[in-house]
Image 1 (tube, rainbow, N blue to C red):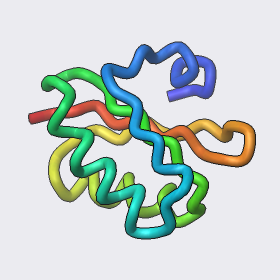
Image 2 (image 1 turned 135 degrees about the vertical axis):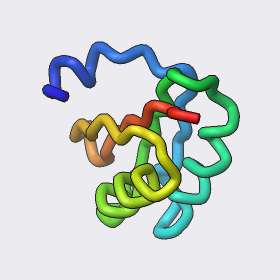
Image 3 (image 1 turned 45 degrees about the horizontal axis):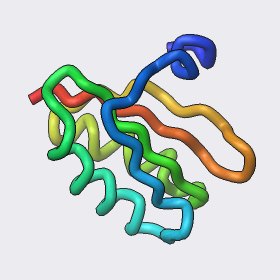
Length: 84
C-alpha cells in the first residue's frame, strides 16, 4: 500500500506501544488483534525499530495481512488487517 492509502485507513483499534522495547510492541499487537473483527485493521504505534521487522513476520506466520507502516514523529505506525 502507498503511504497515502495507509494514512487514510480507519483502524478499528490503536495500540500505543511507544514506551515498550522489543518484544513489548509485538506482545501488545498479539493482545490487540483479538479486539478487532475479521477484516478490520489494527494499528500499532511503536518507537522500537525492531517492530518493523517483527510485526510483518508475525503477521505472516499467524495468517494476518501486514499492510505496511508509516513514519510518524519519532515513532512508527504499523497496520495489520485481521484475516481470521
